[in-house]
Length: 281
Ligand SMILES: Nc1ncnc2c1ncn2[C@@H]1O[C@H](COP(=O)(O)OP(=O)(O)OP(=O)(O)O)[C@@H](O)[C@H]1O
Image 1: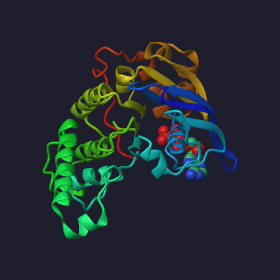
Image 2 (image 1 turned 135 degrees about the horizontal axis):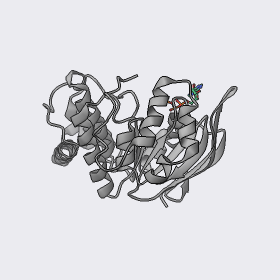
Image 3 (image 1 turned 90 degrees about the horizontal axis):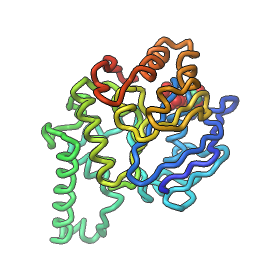
Image 4 (image 1 turned 45 degrees about the vertical axis):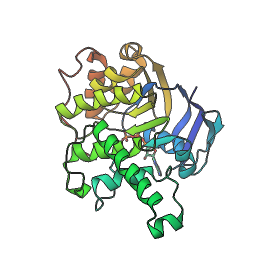
């Protein structure tokens, strides 16, 4: 087992954002964490990646206890993530953004860097080649010397995934990767997620797009008010009364539409009735 989350709890003052969450992720598995807005999905991600300190519970990654450890240490162990709102270096080029993702792995000493020794230049060239390979892998087609902030939104999302992959993580956490993408971009994302899993990298998605979730996930964990209400295959989740109720019980109109999507989505050709692209929040 790669990730073991046991009784994870995070409270902010009076709000218990995550309440006793337990789930496992195996090597190369694709799982989704779904639930209505405010269910605690991002808070759970923030604990796993070290951005929040859990109030209670334990997180093991690759048999090592990473509970409450700093983000850099957790990243170095093989956990990479993307954010709901992109966090790229806007003024850096596409290529440099991906190369920046690699710097945890590249070991250069200051002497080589200052003097631009042949060893330094070789390692810089290798980093550039590798960054280009990851950009190819995610299907990035734009100008790689361009400032990343000038790219279309969907392209920026690809660059963010390339940057995370360049760390060669054992597990990749993606927070709403389909948000704001158009129909064609979502189909490309589905294909990309499958290819990432084929590399042996586990993928954990937070996603509201039920077509994508049902198509790509081997397992789905459902949260509601910080509590896990279901964990099962797409087939089991689709017909789980507690899941439908969690979405229908919400007074949020968007959540109600999601309930419809959970109930009626199918993992064969789920792209027929995709919702219109969401705006980034
Ligand atoms: N840093 C924080 N300080 C205080 N409250 C927080 C903090 N982060 C999250 N919360 C609260 O915890 C609850 C869960 O939020 P979280 O963002 O984890 O939900 P979510 O399921 O990711 O929602 P969404 O689908 O809208 O992204 C919410 O009530 C939120 O207001």
